[in-house]
Image (cartoon, rainbow, N blue to C red; front, top):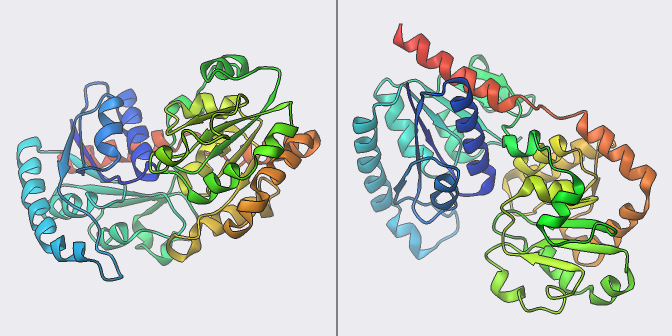
Length: 367
């Protein structure tokens, strides 16, 4: 059996795709898997590291505001359609899976036109443009939030939750082992600040302005993912080089980072929310203001209403990110309540459920 998985651009697309691939391999060890991504994007690095082959398309988005790069869009789209057609012709997948992002558009569209069964996986409460366009061609649409029938054909929608890497959902490492991995002190409480795979300017600005507060809290240490976009700006900053701060451009082992943390500060993207549910962490969400339909705020508010998380706005974060984190860190009772409530919302079998849907599609169309 051959399965093609396409999409990416950010960790929110790439890591669910890898989780689906891992689940497929667990269910069907002989399955052949091929990824198709966008050249220069995160998937071209992360997918090979996960042990899977990937082909890259020369594709990027069309910006709503005027940019010179928009003039290249028709050329990039034509190039990607041509290359995707060649990949499909050579690989001959039994099913094509799209996880959102630029590369999945031409790949899934052509797969559907060729009669190959297709499944798309939508991580967010407000779907991306690519998945909305592809939904009319898809045989099955796996979603993480209720009520997605307002965006997609109801008879195709299946509520599965978001697939999360097994390393996070099945982590067996102790807190002490996790802290040792990052060179952190097991006698101190830990705040993990993570602004997504590319980083968050607001988070970095918030920490960079808090040297005196960090100095004053001797029993606290900070694990700080700056994001690769901002690493050069912050790697020699006094906060980044502080003895109780471990600053990194990117955290490869999120399972260990979550296990090490007593409190997590995070954006409220779909993948982050799902991972934090499974990790069972007390979290302070700072939703990104730069997303379609402000869906990160909706994600965070859903958890806040269920007393499963705390939230501040992006505009408040420069002043309040660290103070609110420390306040939660010191309130043991509230932390335990948040951990219990967020863990109850987890869907630990999403990747396996999606993988079974993929295999069922393959078998149904082979009959």
